[in-house]
Length: 380
Ligand SMILES: Cc1ncc(COP(=O)(O)O)c(C=O)c1O
Image (tube, rainbow, N blue to C red; front, side):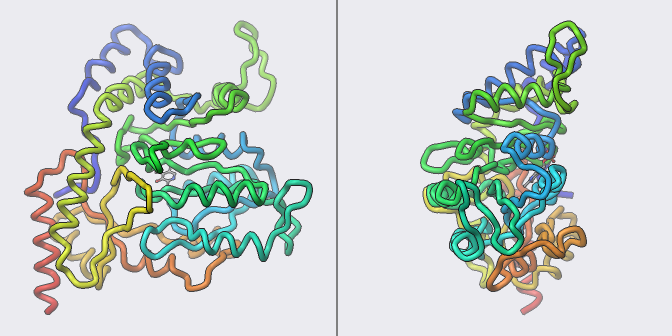
């Protein structure tokens, strides 16, 4: 079996985790937590990085810190992993689902602008959805597969309409737009380190921000909001969202290897592109202008997608379909979905993600691409 995207643990993971066990620093405080946070802050250029239990909790906390409250609306792309939209609902808010572009698979900013200008009004600096009277507090771009939309334009639109930005940059550690790291364009950004991400701590996440107040508050809220070093005095409802030292130790070891991982992801993407280039109707994700992407998960659109997917799986290749668009899920079917041509559905119906672990060999990639060529050859 050629796996989709598995962790690459060839660095100091054992050594650092053993250090935690040897020294008994296994829980939610410890030097590796601090080091991991410093490394992410330095790499991303964010002033604050707050280690957290996973990407979903990072999104939840970030939306709360951005001021999202019950009955608010948050704009989010219709093609994303469920966690982005779930996090919105954890705050008691609802999503406004925005259709995506057919080539980059990021939120369609033309549609966004149309929606904002036609359906919202800025009242006392706050964006109000005219039909429902509800406040649209936040826009959450999702840097799908490590790609990004036109972040200059998104930032301008957000400020014109009184919206703050919380980035679901969980897939985009190692991606840059005009040299600036994913996660650092908005009020807050988020990273995930689950098993399939470019670096993994098994499960883990990070909130990043340049805001002094929010940076401190993120740490406070994720550690049960304990306000006194001795007394169990908690000054608000907090969360036990802290990343433990053992997992942060793994994160430190992974961060040491991140530049190499990004390089390898670039090579993998290039090799797939070269090998698949002659096939009619096959198109890799188009990277946005000015985006230096991390190429986290190699994905392309394929004719006869379902048949090909089944063919690859039967041959031992762990290929995967794209996410079912949010507007097709029972929980979000009745939410506002802004679209002209339902591009999300076309993207969903044609994309396949292919194995691209940083440890994959070039021969394994050729095995996958030869299988794909065979499939189309047999189909005539
Ligand atoms: C786009 C997106 N958002 C959010 C998440 C949630 O991250 P986690 O699995 O660490 O909770 C993920 C990853 O799984 C993701 O891909």
